[in-house]
Image 1 (cartoon, rainbow, N blue to C red):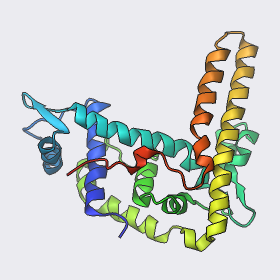
Image 2 (cartoon, rainbow, N blue to C red):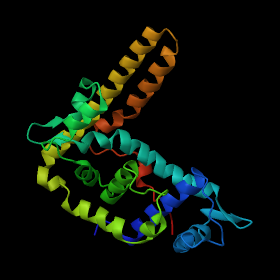
Image 3 (cartoon, one colour):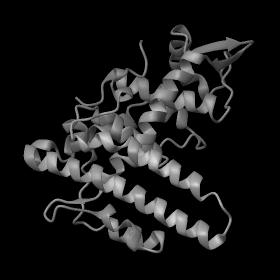
Length: 253
């Protein structure tokens, strides 16, 4: 099993903390009908001091903000580092992202990357690096707005097994490292890290050119920011490297 009961609880609580911290949604100790199913999760967060109660309103504590902050560091890195592996042609050893800057429109880029010859290898990379593949799928669901908390009934979706069963199915059917082979996996992971830094450098170059054309200054700031970013990812040239915050439990229940 890829999605454990703790995973389900962790992921659901991340969604709730996001609602409370970032979206300022109010949950009270007198929960409305739709929110009532969330009560066990809110009480768990309260009992472990990730939440506190101010009057009748649940609020995040510094401990809750820290737990959510760790997740957001992972999520930010997922969107940069691991997204590189979402479209890979195994037969040619080619990354769709190697052609990212060749397209002028989002539609053209989307048509290209969605070609059947590209496989999603993010779960294979997660397993290769000893990470939890279920969390990688959970992050992709967030990116795709699967957890639409503006929709009616989202609370029930969060506590039922429907979404978690879907994540489990994706993990089961995904390409695994053993399907690719150790040497090929290592080479592919190394190539992805190199490609990411190349893309960041190209992004910096284009930003500089645009600023020069606009004559609006700020070139130094953009250059330094992007240099810091691709320097940050250089440790990933080691195919077995993972940032330390991936190894910290999100919650201690």
